Every structure is written in structure tokens, then in C-alpha cells.
Length: 264
Image 1 (cartoon, rainbow, N blue to C red):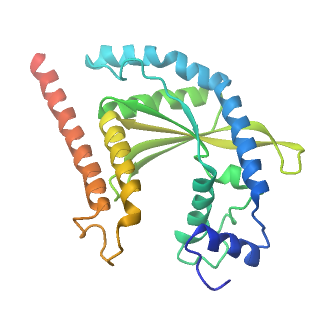
Image 2: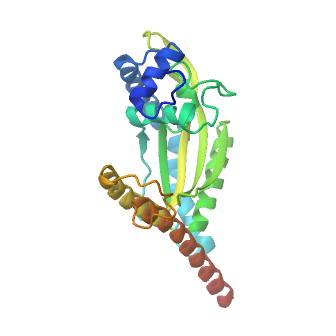
Image 3: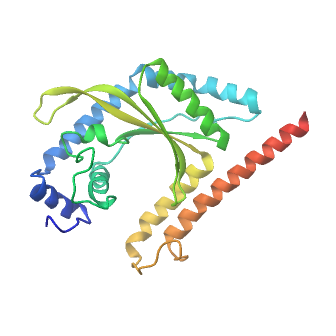
């Protein structure tokens, strides 16, 4: 098994046991749920989060004064989400094994294992801010960076533009949390919180098509084609619609700028 690349969670759990001597059990799932619940509550009560929520109307007003358009949909308020344990475990599989060419060799920064996985998986606790227009993504990003600086928190920003048609800005900020250890003691560690910033169009179509894909993917037979050539596949539809929408949003911004110049 050590030389066979795990392709699913069951094989991965066996590989962890045989290769790294790590036994994943129900106890780890219970610990994960306990930790994430505590972290979510603590983050919701943090000054950073309250400051962000309290200032959304002010951010919207400032953006409106600059552009004459609303930044956010009426009544929008971000919510904090916890990554499902099964999806979390699958992500450690992808990071440890699937996405690595030399998967048998230990990664440069070490394996992602129970002793460190709360610090190494950056979207266990996440939230999303949805703006109406493409330039609002950068506007909100700048505001969040200022908040991170105000509270002396790490702030790592990445512009996600994937071949699968996914477009968003991800901000990872870390806070110190006291969490229960698996042996019922406690420890303080820095855990990253992910803030995704995307547009209303991207958010809507991503949710709709993701549900459709999830419902149908088990019924689709693999035919060996790359999704970019398999025009009948859900991946083809979903991914290229993401690219088309990003282009449309860029054109909307171009029209707005032309109208702005004509009004001067």
C-alpha cells in the first residue's frame, strides 16, 4: 500500500496508518467538530469581526460616493461557515497526496497531520463577502487589509483565477485561539480564517451549477476526455460559464467607466 497512490478517503486512511503510523478514528472527527465550533464562536465574538460587520454600511456609502453604485446587495451580511469534516479530510488527502507529483516524498513543509492540520488548512473557518461589481472586490480587499493592520493580524491575499473558471480574492488572516486538545487539555494556536471576496454573478452561478454538478456527477461515466474537450460534461458547462461571466463583468466595468467620462 505504501507504493500505491491513494485515490479516495478509505485508501488514504489506510495509507496514513501504514506509512505514517497515524490512526484516524471517530475521535478525530469529534475533536474536529469541537475545535471548529469553539473557533467559530470565538471569531464571531472577536473585535475584528464586529468591526468588519459594523463598517459594511460605511464601506457601501463610501463606494457609492465614488461610483454612484451600491457596493453590496441590500441587507447583505456575511456569515461564518465551518468546513464539513469529510471535505476537510479529503482536502488533506489532496494536499498530501493527490496534488503532488512526488507524493511518496514528505513535503518541504511537512505532512498535514492531526497535530498540525488546524494550522495548515486555511479554510476550515471561512466567510464570503459578495459585492455587486468587479471593482468592489478590490475595494473590500483594501478595507479588510486595513482592519488586519489595525488589529495586528497576519494578512495574506491571493487573487484566484483558475482554469476551472473560478474567480475570487482570498484573504487569510490568523488569530490566536485556545482550543481543546484531543487529550482534553487545551492549547493556544494560530488558526487561519479565510475571507472570500467575489461578485454577485460569480456567486450565484457557482452555487447553481455546483448543485447541478453534485447531483449529476455520480451518473456520468468517465470517458478519458479532458473536460475542455468534453462539451457535454457538466465540468465544461460550469467552468466555461465562470470564464464568460468574468469577461461580462469586465465589460460592465468598461461601460461604467465610459459613462463616467461622458458625464464629465
